[in-house]
Image 1 (cartoon, rainbow, N blue to C red):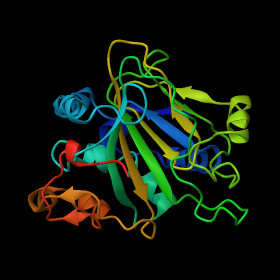
Image 2 (image 1 turned 90 degrees about the vertical axis):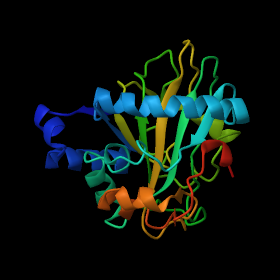
Image 3 (image 1 turned 45 degrees about the vertical axis):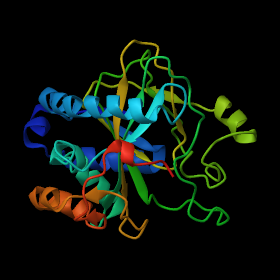
Image 4 (image 1 turned 120 degrees about the horizontal axis):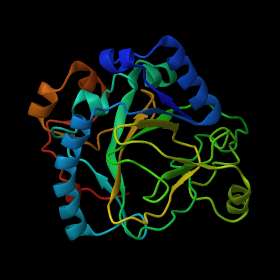
Length: 275
């Protein structure tokens, strides 16, 4: 489900209370919500201009790592990626805080790029349930925020999601990669592809089933990918944050990254590795 911002919301960066409530309901019940064109064209271009040279060097050094012609790449904690409009977005933050609490933290700072010729990913959940044998659905403890840097359509590898409860059934999310009986279930269940213009945002429960789809165009499809946790989930400390970058960040950004490795030199993408 994608919502459109009013002109007043675009100008002020403040969501109507009813939209916050709708977004929270959709994430809790359906697994995700999206908002069209949250970032301006200028902001998107600024991110693209900084991202592309890093990505090109990353692929030259490390190659693809999440399937055919597809790469996950961590971002360095440097401008413009540390701007509020990306990591502490005014439209997203009230929703994140309502679900995860005022102590919300950002502990995953990365991107996903489907290049020309990329194929389907396996259907998967990014994290298994905290207590898989408990037999009941727990409230959300981690949310993923995606920001596409290009218009996303049928042809260039849109995100495909399985809404309606795949994040709530503990049996559904016991395995991060869906295979065997669960794969057969996914093939028979309702899914939808998320089409959106560049600069939109999508917020989803990290347990929700999803996959990347093939990019049949001649241009990359890049999503910024950030993960926000409740204050008690995950230790943090994996994002290296130069002291000067931390000091000039806004108070909101500082709060989001407070448990990371502050004072360490920024790690460039090719210095980071998937676990």
